[in-house]
Length: 69
Image 1 (cartoon, helix red, strand yellow):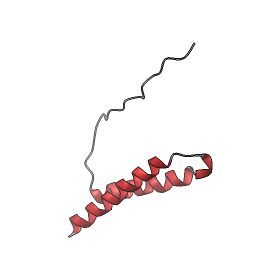
Image 2 (cartoon, helix red, strand yellow):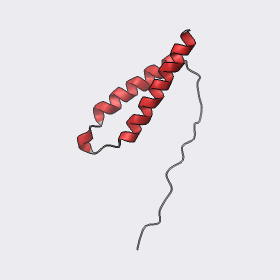
Image 3 (cartoon, one colour):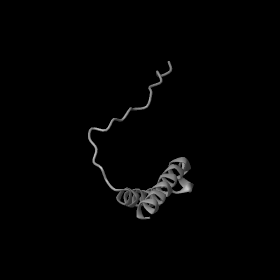
Image 4 (tube, helix red, strand yellow):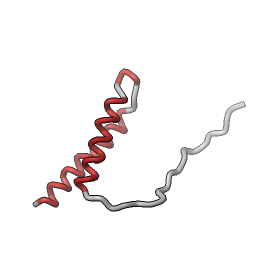
């Protein structure tokens, strides 16, 4: 008998704290570096996560540049 398919777990934030774009960029960059170090292509990792994090990082960089002008 087949298992019943279950939808993915839905996450909801319990609280939030405002941070600057520069601080967010720093956190995302550090996480991305660590994530890339842990997941190598030889492990068959999903590159879509890395691509989305790189897009976020680039957008945060652009926002920091706009704010500094």
